[in-house]
Amino acid sequence: MLGSLRRIFRHGYAIDLGTANTLIYTPGSGIVLNEPSIVAVQLRPPRLLAVGNEAKKLYGKSHPNVETARPLKDGVIADFNKTNLMVRTFIKMVNHGFHLTRPTLVIGVPSGTTQVEKKAVIDAAMQASAKEVHLIEEPMAAAIGAKLPVHTPKGHMIVDIGGGTTEIAVISMFSTVYSESLRVAGDEMDEAIVRYIRKRYGLQIGIFEAEKLKILLGSAVQLPNTVEMSTIGRDVIEGVPREFRITDKDIFEALQDPVNAIVESVLKGLSYASPEIAGDIMENGVVLAGGGSLLRNLHLRIHKATGLKVARVKSPLIVVVLGAGTVLENFGLYKQTCIV
Image (tube, rainbow, N blue to C red; front, top):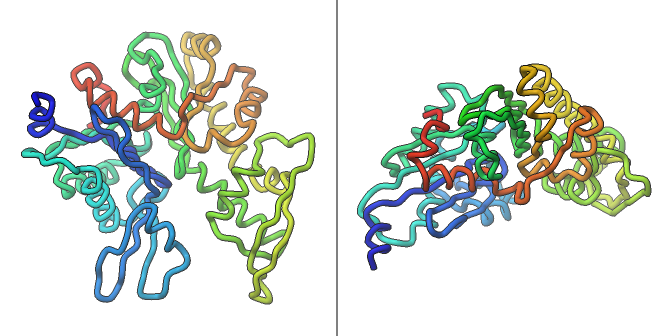
């Protein structure tokens, strides 16, 4: 009963407001929501139809009076009103209990977020009835979620590859020594596959089909044995659907530009490290997080380019929200890791 009373009078949420997915963590319950960052609205008369998984079912399939959109792009708010609707609805979905106070929110944002973009996130959260809002950079949250010793003077490099951004950061003593936010990540990989298939085969596929091909056939290094599968695209000249076969080599070629951009950013980050930090990274290696890190053999590609140990965290898709949740639960200890 005492625990219930505490939850009524004081509660909060940690949120990973991602381009591809939004995750919400609550103290005591863990991750209570993991849904696509998608909103479906009716235009006339205007009203919210669906968010998350239900909105994804309508993506690209609705009639002209229904607009289905992803309101975040490259890790930041592209459509304030739709983001506001989405955040409010998600919080309402997880707020099953009765609370006498508004929640405190800890939200992960890209390391390259501008002051205007930070304000947009805070304003959206406050309009969703938050009492106070704290922002934490996603690579710091990922490092905390991965249980890296961020409090020590040892340097650690983490590469968080999300939907909209790749965050490269070197972290030491609760602070970010170096960071870069590269707006090339999982979404750009999917778009590269769409462009490649259109150019080579004259077929248009949807973005979710491209994501499926990335997951099933994608690799950062060429596979020794050919793997292929059937998919369906729309002929860009005749306008009719057509089934065709595509191989892992096609997807490997399609992904060359985004994968090279990520590898080059890792090399750039290493070049900015002091000799002391470089020694720490040599000892500790590079840590990969985020959904984009699930691309097959990406760790091998980065290892080949850097000569360093490269390891992916145990739960790359949820590590940012786990870190933000740790900050929320232990705010006195981790307050200095927040940028707002």
